[in-house]
Amino acid sequence: MNRMDLRTPKTELDNRIQQLQLYLQQEKIDSALILQKADLFYFTGTIQNAHLYVPADRSPILMVKRISPEPGKNPLLTRSSH
Image 1 (cartoon, rainbow, N blue to C red):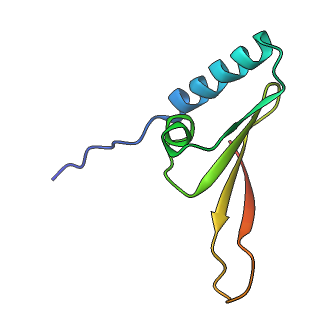
Image 2 (cartoon, rainbow, N blue to C red):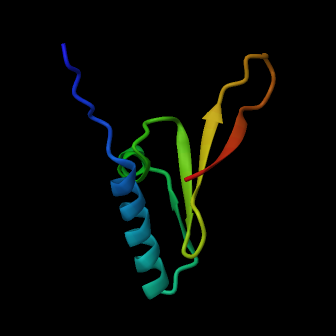
Image 3 (cartoon, helix red, strand yellow):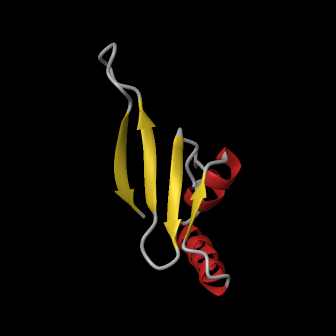
């Protein structure tokens, strides 16, 4: 049985980020912070508990909240370049 791949192609996600960055530059906005899950999915293809920082002129940073396995420890943020 063949499985259909429903993931958004990386080229499409890259294009969406580039279009956002172009808009930010045209409007003289330094950066955008993506918080809403629908917007996060649109720009990254992920539904993780995360935030996306998109500077107008640099690579975006996806910050994923991880729950620490040890009680009393703060969640960790990891840096991932797009």
